[in-house]
Every structure is written in structure tokens, then in C-alpha cells.
Amino acid sequence: MLKVQTGQIVEFYSNSCCVVSEGKELRCKIQGRINLVVGDLVQLESFSMDSNSEGLVTKRLDRVTALYKSKEKVKKPIAANISHIGILVTKNPKTNLEFIDKWITISKNASIEPFIIFNKIDLLQNSSFQENKKVYESIGIRTFQISAKLFTNLDELKKYLSKKTTIFVGNSGSGKSTLTSAITGKKILSKALSNNQGVHTTSVSTLYQTDGMKIIDSPGVRDIGIDHLKPKEIILGFPEIINYALNCTFPNCSHQTDEGCEVITALKNGDIEESRYNNFIFLSNQEKTK
Image (cartoon, rainbow, N blue to C red; front, top):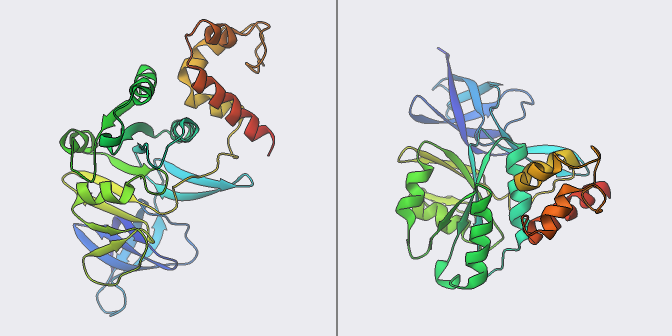
């Protein structure tokens, strides 16, 4: 007899998925052509007669939030129902400020809260690191200094992640898998596939649930395009610029010329960080050329 219930996708493959429902993990097939990603809440029919499957996903429930990647202004969801995005920053490999500002912009447009994780803190004891940290804290971005490899300062981060659904983003080698493993206790392999029980791989998007928190580990979020965002949406990632832009003389001000522009005035007065302004202009102009 079929039982209709709801659940959340914790692992997604090309034509099947793993769903957590009523405290159990079910291997499910997917009915029809439902567009699903990790984190989606779904309706399913569970059964135990089929040895190859334990359920059938019949419907996707409404998404609270969704993270998209875009190519040629076509959006494709890669994860759903996320509350927070953790941006990993490292000295080696170097994380440039444009990467950080782009992810803040992506987060704000998706109604997801961004925060910054300065990983490998043993490599970050320099003045530029401290200056960058202050810049982002001044615009309300929460920051953490950790070492995922050395398990340094993880307790504070775990406390922050409690009751949240978080996805980590960063350059290759920034420690996303190491951090996910340190927090969840799961062994995460970044390259080789493995079918051994208890071993997971970032070749497949996975949602981990542990200690009241949910962590999504996905190979598709190293760096994603923003060409689907308009200039009025890109500015959402720059709240300090918005504050001054509201007082510009001309409502269609591009914030690139002096005439009547309060943003330029604030920049000259040192009230807006130059790197933040430059990245705002770069991202805005990048969108216009596509």
C-alpha cells in the first residue's frame, strides 16, 4: 500500500534521488520531468515492494529560496531552501575581492544571508587581511576566522550554523570539503568517486544534517555567472553604495561621473571603500556587455 508523505532531497542524481522523510532516508525515483535540486521539499509516495527503490517523488513543493547559476542569461537552479551562504576566503589559493563581492551580490538577490569564513588563519596574519575583514564587517557581513584543517575556532562557527541551512562557496583548494567534513564528521572526497558505504564525494550534491544544522556540499558552486542580474539588482550587494545613491541628483545615475553623484562624492571622502566601488562598477559593466 502506498503512503503519501513529504520530505527533503539530500542527494540528487540524474534520474533519482535520496529523500529524508519522517527521519528515514529513502531511495526514490522521480515521476515525469520534475525540476529538482538538493534542498528541495517534495511530496512522495513510499513503498517497499520494489527492491531498486523505496519511493516515488510526485511533486516539488514551493521553494523558499533558490541558488541559481546562469549562462547566457539562462538561469538553472543548483540548490534550494538555503538560508545562508558561507564565502570561504584564503590567502593560498588567493581569493580576490571581486569573488567575495559577487557572492554577496548573488546572496542578496536570492534573499540568502551571506557571511565570510577566513580559512587557513595560520596563513592570514597580515595587515591586508585585517583591513578586508573590517571592510566587510562595516557593511554588516558576519566574519569568522578558522582553520578547518587544524579544527581551530570551529565551535563558534558551529553555533552560528545551528538551525540554518548553509552552502559553502570558494575557489578550488579553499577548503570547502575539509570544512564540511570537520563540521559534519563525514569523509568528503573532492575528486574520486567511491561506492563504499560511509564515503561521500563532491561529484554529487549532498545535504548533510547534523547537530541541528544542515550543510549543502555541491560541486556546482565554485564560481557562477551573474549575467541574469540587472544593474538595479547588482547594487543590492553594495548596501553602502545604495545609501548614497538614493541622494544622487539624477535617478538614472550610473555612479561613474562626478555630476550630481553622491556615490562619487562619498568615494572621494573615503566613506566608500575603493575596492568595493570598483567591483560594483566592474560587475555592473560586465552585465551590460552580455
